[in-house]
Length: 305
Ligand code: PGA
Image (cartoon, rainbow, N blue to C red; front, side, top):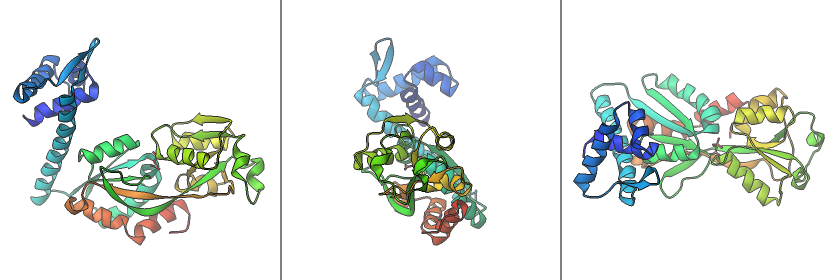
């Protein structure tokens, strides 16, 4: 079993076809088939089976694909650790849920970089499935997201995440000192794409107040939702970190809805905090600091928590 064969197999699992994997790896289809065949012979099990006109992974193939991704992630970590031990630049591989990647991490990273200009940092931003996958397969050292750790990963809250209902500035309910949530049932609610933590929180909020919105409109990015809300397409529940600039510039207003702000946290997520690469351990330490909280607050123009 070689790393090359495992890499090929992971790509077959991702692409769902030999052809797709060959295209992604920029190799020929026979070479992909040969790698899969070699793994299958070595393990003496079938890894792929026919599925209509295509292929799918057998149960054995699914198991192997999961471990293969983890082995490749660990191999990358081993390479980085060895290079660092020999005097190479320390590396930090981060992955973040969209809102955290867009609004929370940039100010924190700016401060962290001032202290550690030597660290080579990369940040991937995506949905929760990507965040969890990157962490579990060790492609990312640390993740930041808005939902608490699950059975597979550990983590800790490091910052408050307040979500507020926002609307266009001249919304009729904008002037009210207190808005009963039931008054919002007739509104069009703009919600993020399925799989986003913000959407989950919105759904929990609506269900918790017994609100079935007249219209629920899915809009797949914070930026697009804010634009849509600002021009009066609907109202939305978003992290204060995501709307701070628009609230300050009065392009959006926050409605004083009972039960809001919805109080959540931003979490640092990891597989095993005792075995983090050195740069990741210092970044985790920095996330826990008051300086990190102040950096986010300053960028958002809100009080530090
Ligand atoms: P989201 O992430 O931007 O994907 O919604 C934030 C969260 O997980 O709450």
